[in-house]
Image (cartoon, rainbow, N blue to C red; front, side):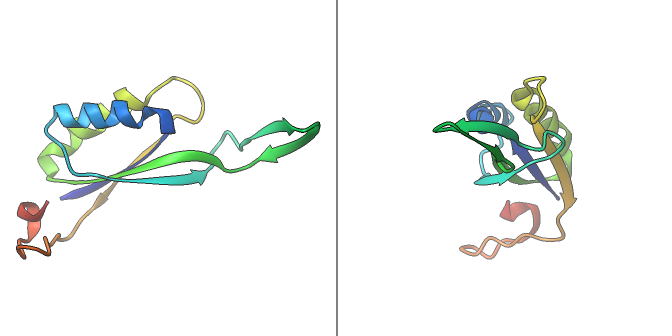
Length: 112
């Protein structure tokens, strides 16, 4: 099993969710986060004063999948989240040793 963590622009979450749903992937965790990468934030003017916004709002999407579904999910996330502009985000893939569904005590891929 693998865990996919994707950091994407907030307005892209519905497109990514729909793309994953088309693959039959329904379960996911979505968190509102703030951060920056190469774009280093940006400068804004508020009431005549200029200030720097270092941490930009992003969405962190987490999905646990069987190894066989990972490549398709990554392609779907990248295609749906891509705008071609700086700050589109990143996708990380991590190994998952085990998963346990608390209600039924199922383990492994059956728990996902």
